[in-house]
Image (cartoon, rainbow, N blue to C red; front, side, top):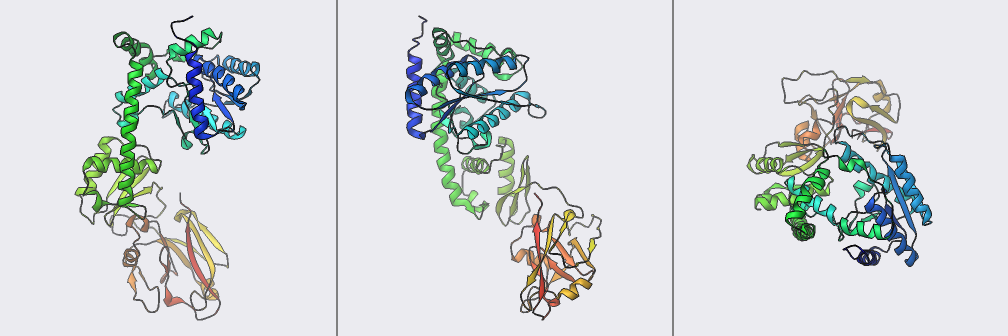
Length: 470
C-alpha cells in the first residue's frame, strides 16, 4: 500500500460528483481523456461512479496530431473505453500556433472540439482531470503575469464557458481539484491502470512545464504541502473577486445609460472602483481584458479631456469613444472607399457613384457599406416613381455644407445640425451615405428624405438605407 490512502480518492470523487449532480442534474456525463495519468484515473473513477448511479458516460478524446505518438494515444483511450463498455468519440484538429502560440492554439481547439462532442451526444456535464498541482501551477503562473484577484482565483470547481466550449448548455467541472497528482498516481498504480506519457510535458520551453519540473520541486522541498496553501489562497481570491463583481454590477447599473457609460458618474468614483467597473463591463462584452497601463490611459483621457472632446481609444478588438460625456464601445470597421471627414480640408474629395433607378426593389452599394431600398411610400410622402427614374442619381458620403428639409413644417438645416439633433455620433456620420440628383440632395441615411421633392401623387417611392458593414 502506498503512503497515500487510495480509498480517499474514490471517496473524494464521489463527494464531488454527488454535489455536481445535485446542483446541475446532468442527464448524461462526459469526460475529456488524453490517455495520461490524470485522465485515466478520471476515466476509472467516473466509470465506476456512473455505473453505480446508472448514468450514461461518454469518453471524448482530441487528436492534435502534434506528436508522432498521437495515434497510439487515441487507440489507448479507445481501448480503455471499450473495455468498460463506454461510448467513445474523437475529434482530430489541426493546430496552427501562428500569432497565439502552439499551446494556446491547441487549448482553444481542444475545448471547442470537446464542446461539439458534448452537444452531439447530449452530455450536459463535462469532467476534466485538473487536480491540486494544476491549480497551484495556474495560481503561480497568474502571479508571475501580474494578475489581479480574477487571475489568482485559479480554476473553479465548475463553470460554464460558452465562448471556450461553443456550447452554452454545457457545464465543465473539475472533480479532482482537491487531490494532488501524487494521490492520483498512487490510486492509479493500486488500481493497475496504464497510461501514456506525453513527451511535450518535458519541454521546458512551455511556461507550465518549466514551473512543473524546475520550480515546483524546489517549492515542495522548501515548503511541503504548498499546493494546498496555494489552493486556499485561490479560494480567498475567488471570494474577493465575487465581492468585486457584485460591486461592479451595482456600479454598472447606476452608470449605464442606453448601452453607454455615463462619464460624469465615473468622476465621482475612486479610481479603483472605476477600474473595477470597466473591467466588468469589458468582460460582459467578451472583450479581452486590457492591461493596467492601457486602462489607466483610458480613464485619464475620459476624466481629463474636455466634455465636448471626441475621444477615441483603440482596443485590439474595438474602439472606445466618448460622445456627449458618455463612453461607447464601437466595433472596428474597415474604411469604405470615399469615406472622409467633411471638416478635414486635407482630404481629397472623391466623386460619388452614379446610377439610375429602373424600378428595382433594392440596389447594393458595397463601396458604401450597404443596400439602398426603394419602398412604396405613403401618399404625398415620397418621390414620384416616373420622376425618380429620369434622374441621374448619385450616392456619396457627405462632403460638408449639404442641407436637408425633412418636413414642410420644419426648417432647412445643415446635415450636421440634423445629426446632432437626433444624437448620431460623429463616427457614425462618416459611414452614412447621401443620395442626390447630382444637384439636389434627396436622401440622407440615418435622417430621411428631403420633402421639397415629394410628389402629391398617391403612388410614391421612399428610400431606406440598410447598412451591411460588419
